Amino acid sequence: MWNCFLTRTSRCFSTSAGNKALKWWDHVAPAPKDPITSVTEAFLADTSPTKINLGVGAYRDDEGKPVVLQCVREAEARIAGCDFLESVSSAVSSKLVEESVKLVYGKNSDIIKEGRFAGVQALSGTGACRLFAEFQRRFYPGSQIFMTDPTWSNHHNIWRDAFVPERTFQYYHPDSKGLNFPALMDDVKNAPDGSFFLLHPCAHNPTGVDPTEEQWREISYLFKVKNHFPFFDMAYQGFASGDLDRDAQSIRIFVEDGNLIGCAQSFAKNMGLYGHRVGCLKYVHILDYILSVLCNDAKQAAAIKSQLQQIARAMYSSPPVHGILLVSGILSDPNMKALWVEEVKVMANRIQSLRTTLRKSLEQLSSSLNWEHITNQVGMFCFSGLTPEQVDRLQRGFHIYMTLDGRMSMAGVTTGNVSYLANAIHEVTKFG
Image (cartoon, rainbow, N blue to C red; front, side):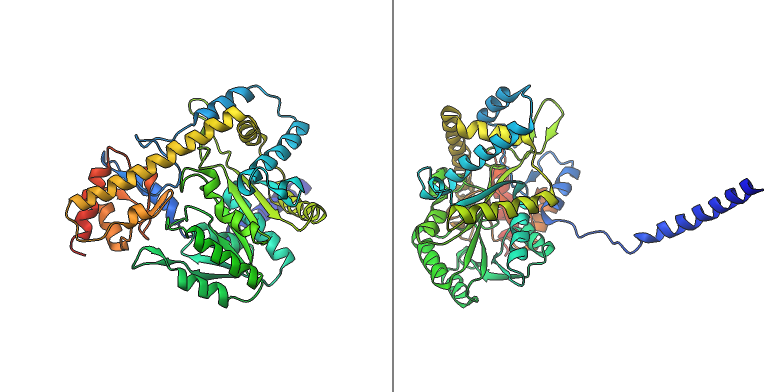
């Protein structure tokens, strides 16, 4: 009898609990699709042999395939079979941070010699930005972040989920398809003193529009006067000019002027680690980002680093050691680093060459539009000026995929498809 009661009770409880469980998440609706991943999904579903993906922000070779750099192959071979010990991870991680910040501030920078920076390894660009956003919210509650209009779409998500209010400042001029410098300076000047700003030091995403050296100097001077804090998201060092030092020039100008800064620094793109192939069918995501914050002295740097580590501990604990060994192996070996520098130049030069070819192809079609912005802009992306309607026509009529704002990833352009792309763009734009 007691067993029968228990059976009936457990059934009743299970049914009740089951019904209640079904209602737990009934109010959850699907999240809005990410504009960039949506492009890739649509491209993959298309069976046309002429399809082109201009949405992905990772480098491709002239056959449209992901590239594993030779320096990465050699570094991979060196660490094959290595015991990933905890003690090794800690020591190599510190070396990685030190070698990485040299690329930002300069190898002979006093900042490094005096230990005036707090640096930690983060999980990709999103992770580094999210880590700083949480740091900002925790130690400057109530502060806001000013972002360029436009900026990388995920920047909005990152600071929103850290509960940091977002504002924009003018950056891109849709008519000239270049920098709206006067408006930018006005917005920086009119922002409350001591504001946080998110800046792109080179190869601006999504516009490909960068300030000149003189403009950066004016921006830096105004930041110093207004006591603003610049946080740089450097995802494409080397892709703007092919020169790692030149692409870090904007940051060094700010440092020379006495600004304290923060910087998220990536190797995902310039080392081709966005989806690093290991073996035949196995992919390992080892996007390496370094988050560094410039400090007044070594004591302050130690305090800030401890806080960043504590925040990271609750988010992801510790980063994968494989990526640490790979990147630090390249940066700490003079020969491998030299090889990497040359490979970065090759990637940047290919993109610059395809910009020139695309522009010439459009001009040879007697297009009535001005396409100078294709070669004036730099880096991975071209902000084409195409309207959402024209982008939709490219997708439906020509199987060419890009985000609705007209951002084209130049890495998806090849010598084999550039003529087809130019003709398609000409067709959708010739009647306005």
